[in-house]
Amino acid sequence: MAHRLPPAFDLTPAELDRLRALCDRAVANISRGLTEMFGAAMRVTALDLCVLPLAAACGLLGDPEQEIVGIYLATEGALSARLLLALAWPVALQLCDILLEQPPGYTRAIGELEASALGEMGNIAGSFFLNALSDSTGTPLMLTPPTLLHDMAGAAIAAALLDVATVADEALIIDAGFEHAGMHLPAWFLTFPRPGQLRGLLRLAEGMAR
Amino acid sequence: MTARPEVMVPVGLGELRVAGSEPVVLMALGLGSCVGVALWDASVGIGGMAHVVLPEPFADNTEPSPKFASHAVPALVRAMLARGSCREQLRGVIAGGADVLSGPVGGLFNVGARNVVAVLQALQREGVRLVAQDCGGKHGRSLRLVLPEGRVAVRTLGAEWRELSG
Image (cartoon, rainbow over all chains, first blue to last red; front, side):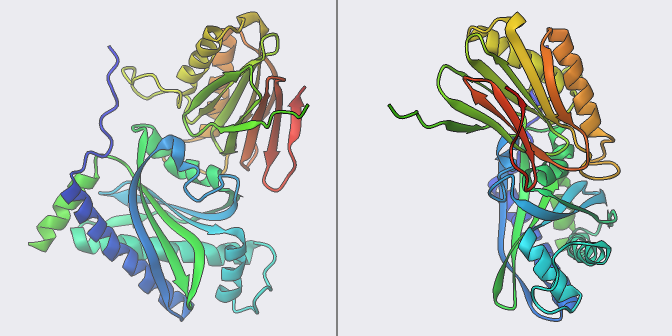
């Protein structure tokens, strides 16, 4: 007899609120890391936690065919999650100008140097996110090296969702947007945690708070 | 007389759609390691598309889902036969299965290539004739099926639609 897939994200509203607070702190820490990297304030403009059916996930950034640069990372330890820092193509070029101290409009393509700078940015975002989660839960969380991809948004999101798709038909998505020097950046920091680990993570955070 | 506007129907991750008799464009957009499977029966103008995410479930007792190649292809064929298609008339085109990230993706090795193999095997088991495929490589692509004509095309980032069958 076929069994239904387990309810993927059966968190209570109270647990979701606690998870949101945990992520809020972690995402704020990304701002701190990127602010240090950019030497100018980088602010989180939005944080959203939502559960989406897999079928809708590829449209998460709008058009699934939108050209993006994605910085893909994975976590190891108590939380197995895939992280994707997605940048609209013009924003990726703009950020390369800033990171490599070039005049605006200078970067036209992503070569080795630009890829390395963007990878480092993703690494910092991921590390600061995980460090905050580690501090809140008292659990070491490790990050894999960044992988850069320049592709359609749908292809990048699907790659980050594969792990979740093996066990669930829904994905819990932690989505943050950024602002730099008063300018909104069409950039998204997406986290796709594997189901079943979130309650354990919340328990650890609760234990640390006591 | 003016032509009726085409209705665009997106086929999302792990979805399966069948349409026919009215002008419809089925589209799987931004396929990376996923494989889009387009089937049509030109004799009745019925077509369908599946957006396959994984080759097969890890556990035997997993509920059937069109996100798996091993479930999606038979389900798509069944749905088309139920709408009046004839198995012998079914034609197929597949696209996707790229290796968008080098190394393991989500802990899965070569998932794009494995998706392609699983889809081809399932099509063979179902006796569907494959007329074209555009698979592999390092980049994502989109697949569209224009009905009732059964015209299939793919496009990659920044490129125009390229017809695979007519």
